[in-house]
Length: 530
Image (cartoon, rainbow, N blue to C red; front, side, top):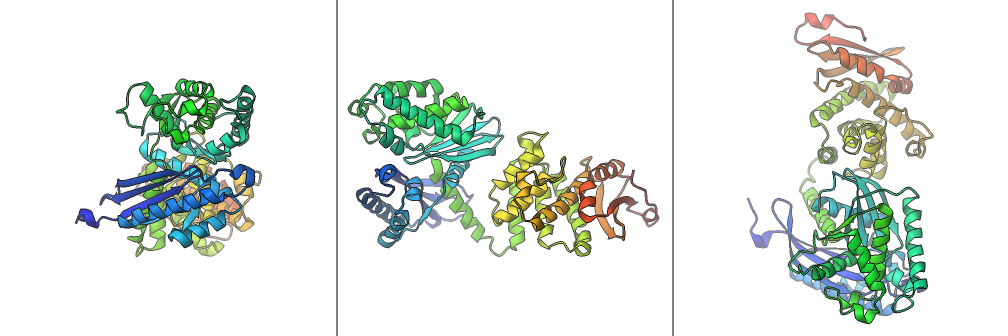
């Protein structure tokens, strides 16, 4: 039954940035989507002076606390549950903890200080929801007053995520020492931007045709471009600027003193002093990545925060479900997201569990291994969305960055490694993802990956011919009896080819035999492995 409008839950996200504090209040629809019912923003310049003193100033801190208090009152008046996050300025300030305590004392708002990588992930989640990004490499960028978060993705899969010290307020305070900016100071700013990009992204650039950007600078550039195009009816959200347009804005801003920038149509006068630094950081990154266009994501990290709050409420409704079912449910959602073959992966997972159950007691495997190998089997092919030939490696990165609810970082690492080694090279200590694990975890991964390899081979034709597997551990061998309605010759051949890792892990040879199902006589006709 649908809830009445007044009964629908309301959620509020407060984003305490280094330059601007923003509030969005949303009402959750029955289908899990939301609609914005109120918004507010205030430029408080919380990071003012931070690069010189290392701490938040008294005046901007006081203004920030007052602003947070006002936003909390707005959210309370609308009956919204509040979640607040703080980013670069509070994260880096030596008195950041004291600031959070004062916020809690005076406004009753508990500030969560998030890491730069988490900030970038929120921007990526919002971009992925609002724009199609599975068909080409893209860069997702969130630019604030204190830092620039960059996430590089291909086929919807995160390849790199980093936080760069290139915030608009930071760059302005460090380099804008003349008005208009002199050539010497401009060259120094460019050099610092290029150095930070090179240090974070490496000498070989990731080529991305499109950059999806969130933050006040992107919104400001879009507003300025709208006025220049005489297209003031266009929405900033989804607005596209070319690389040439961004570069032209930089050249124009360089020639203008701040007093003239304040008169630019579409530009908030309060941003006039920092717009050049922000536009320069975007332009240099676009050049480095060879981006040809910018798409503006006006919603940004607040959108992702609201969506996470909705997901949290959804989980509360499922609290009576066993944790294992909740977690595996999240794995299946991830598999669907990257378009895995559900029929094949579900069947491989079933066979892998059969094999694990037969090996568990004889080899004293931990009970957790059953769920881990099932989860890895369900998502072992998701890397194909990036590249088929290296899909096992891409699967590792997708799983690590998935944030599947309910799993600890260690458990995700185990699942990712099991999927990583479902084909090709065996686990080696020269592999960083494997070498950094505890010896007991490395031992478990060898067994589980070996199981997954065999299970995957047993559905080589993707026809689910092998229905079930019964395992019998003997003195010198592990015998697997395959139940199938017709001779699974290709499956036995494929599983035998992939059995080396499991044989090494359990130190026994593997024997695969088929027994037909359907008649008692057929059960007596074993067929030796090919």
